Length: 570
Image 1 (cartoon, rainbow, N blue to C red):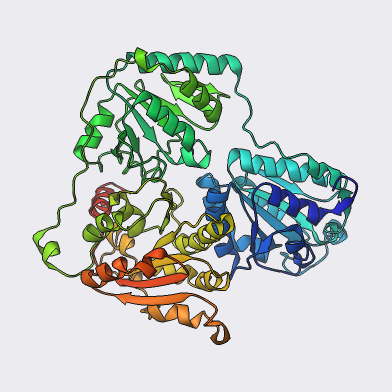
Image 2: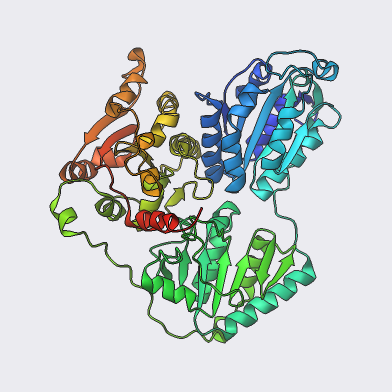
């Protein structure tokens, strides 16, 4: 590589490959077609999604699992279609590279009246729309600076775990640049902390920890997004701290560890969990996101003087913010320097997870209800599974499921865009196929959400991915019903024959090539029989389950949360 030149597209796609992106999502368009000619020669698999929004959702989940995801769209009409997904990736700290094929440089400079424009000669308007939802941007207008710009933006994406935006003009694709630069890897380590501030933060944290009688550890999404899960587990194991998670932190902690103590959701928590956290005299949080859903309507009751909050690039404690102290380096120091013999932690019984008790009516029925389903799924899940839960009843219901070790959860607790789940399942299943890990991808999808992004099921089939999808058919937008409009017409949806959809998306001549099976389940005994089936449980190929639930049935935590919202003035 060092003695030859490469074109700009080759440089960009090779860099993505080096950073772990082996599959490129997106939709072709006339301003990106020449660039797409170089995707597969650079060792990447072109996915080809049904639309740009789904491509963005898929790249998001892929990035969570592979370290970085990427998609290509065309100027204007294509890029705007995926901005919802990119905004979600920004909110949820997900590393996604958005590459936009733009018109030729001369056309842009002269303000030509081209298609896909607003007709006003402004070729920056769409880039300006992406600025607030990306951490870094570049417009590759000059071959002399293109390699450095690509490296700068990709580094920002990986290090900050947030989306970035790259404009690639059609006539820049084949411009030649120095290929020897590719011999030097992009440095993706976080910046070094300010040494004095890190020293002070470490000293204060250890002093607080050693003085505490009832210290606890609370893990959230930031621990996963900023790739410090192993460090948090090392810290929990060395200190013996009772370890709690938040809803967004589901999957971050090892729920089979003796240190694992439960899920903290503010006043929505089990009483023993809530008391243990809120009466703690030192709560160390890692990557905490105090959003409304994550905190059950901002009902956290953790004292500001008793909490130590570790974030990506700063620490908050004692009502002060310690800037330029990076989570990764601080955790490495804490793991290295903490002395368990100095701790004064009292022997306190760990919170005991209560079994969900079914009401007499639910215990007697054969209906698949949320109260019955989510605890039941606990014993069906396997170590290493990737579990996607759609925004709605599923991403709340999964809080009642105990994960085996190594299970990763993917959801959008903060951004909460319905329809995310199916695109994310495609991206996650592709990541599992590419990494060769043999892990199952399991998605719980609502019927209303499915209708927004249903066509991505065809991409799962075309890419021959292993994915098990439980389509919860409860006749509408159930989460919305509980928020407002229980019997309102606007929360109803069209009735689809969901179990037939996978067949429709599989071309006749290719039916024998794809491993696609569909099921229709209406009772608990039918689901028990399916979960006991070894071929189904292996998760090879696409297994699409139309799972019927009664209308107006929802997880109790969701009901409680919705009712608490309705009591507050708007």
